[in-house]
Image (cartoon, rainbow, N blue to C red; front, side, top):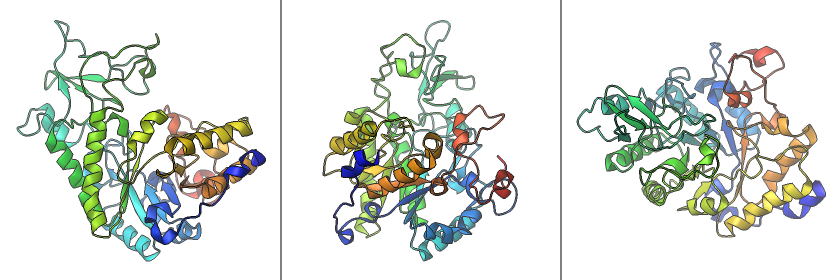
Length: 410
């Protein structure tokens, strides 16, 4: 494999002083629940991160991507937000966050936060008011009447990750209507055809930028805006999400328009010499991915995620070349081998190949992202009583070799 990749592994000759910070740093993703527990309650927290900033600095990283720390009922471990301007009490409070920012600033490490604009928690005050038709909040979410006497769902849309054809519409007795959720019913989608929603979410950005963060990783970008409410054509017979042609619900032109509004909003911070970045999670085909490059945003590169130990050298080369060729020279690349939603690299490759791949993503032209624990080749852990397979890669950082890494228990 190494010989097959040799011609691709090089350090790009850029003048670092002329590049924005996010093009010159290594990003390190932290899943706060599992990184470091400072108070022995079995849950990682902000103080645990603060206490280990020196360790992070020793790795040579220049930026942290922090998975959600917002107030949340944890139906999806923070990706169901009930208060965008407050901290999940399990992780600390705003004072804890300020202490973390102070320590990071002292060590010249920047922080970007997960930003979840597509949906909120069903416990969010906006949703509670919307389902009760409170004036001003009636249209913060996507509400539709049922169809016919039986009040069937408005369209045939299926929720993401559904394997049984579960509808993306949930009936709400209080409002006597359906609401749309591309993910779980506990995560109702926001309605970006309502200008107030966009302004609310810009306000969330402002709040955290004023607290010192340097940018955001924007979650679930392709699903931001639905353009019409019609049935989508089936492209296969299975009752799953991927068997629908998502003409109206994914990668729409209206989504690009809203994304442009967000990036334009960040421009004022760049003008004040407080350069920000917006990293996008967009699990879309390459022809759609390239459309997400806008105003120095970085759509995530998932090309290396499907490779395994039995993948050939040619497959490695092809995945790297397809991204470089697809984004073209004027667009900035990025590379990573694992994250909180995927199998860890060390569970897909042996130790030597894991180390080699970590080296390769540091040398390829673009910005490297690494997931906590990859530096010590952490593997997925088989968990009992967890139906969410993603939790295998979210287990406690192995500060030592004792059970639960010496301190944490999921």
